[in-house]
Length: 150
Image 1 (spheres, rainbow, N blue to C red):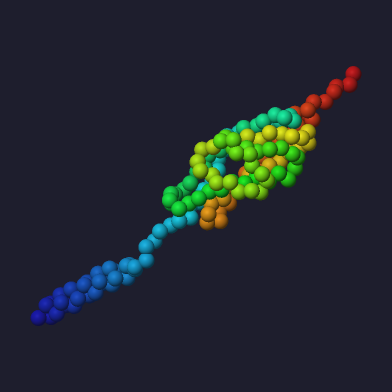
Image 2 (image 1 turned 135 degrees about the horizontal axis):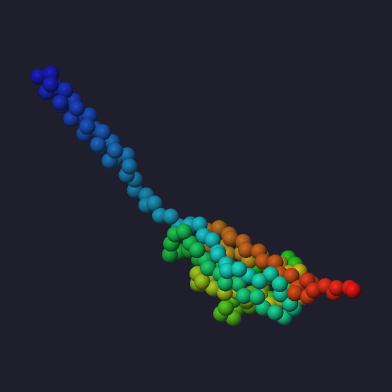
């Protein structure tokens, strides 16, 4: 009789434990992640450029996850020097204007318009506020050439 009562208590305890586990882990909210971290990888870029010369910047957007509603934009700012930046589809960027980034693999072309040191900052942003900044510095090819005096 005592064994039977112990078995009934054990069975009830087991049933309550299973029920507590099942009901405590359930909720009515869907857990959908929308904002995934991302990076922008580039191939090596030349650092010396002459006025009128164009440097190619090969880029690839690397996302850690996929969400159909994720949208990306690109913009740039040039704190030093003068030049133009354009996308491989021919779009010429204006400083600080946002442009939609429709592809994950793309190329940018920077054309120098000055003989000074030049810097461009490129920002890729998603619609959740995450930003990746790339900075490229270019030196004038002619600055490195020095005359040797005899």
